[in-house]
Image (cartoon, rainbow, N blue to C red; front, side):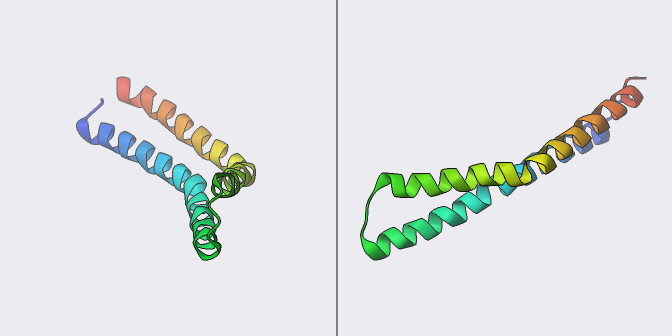
Length: 90
């Protein structure tokens, strides 16, 4: 039976995994952007491509590096939700 505790547990687990995946992709990009911003401030180069391109490359690199883990984590989450769905209905 679907109780409020079970629903909260399912939603909390989904939100946690979503936040974890977003952090894996975004935090390295933020660090790269900070480094580029410090470089731009030190050299007074205000080129828009210099701030955009490294963050794009870092994000794509993280997708290549952690893509398998991200897909595996999402697959495990969905399998667990569908396993619980059978028990929660009846």
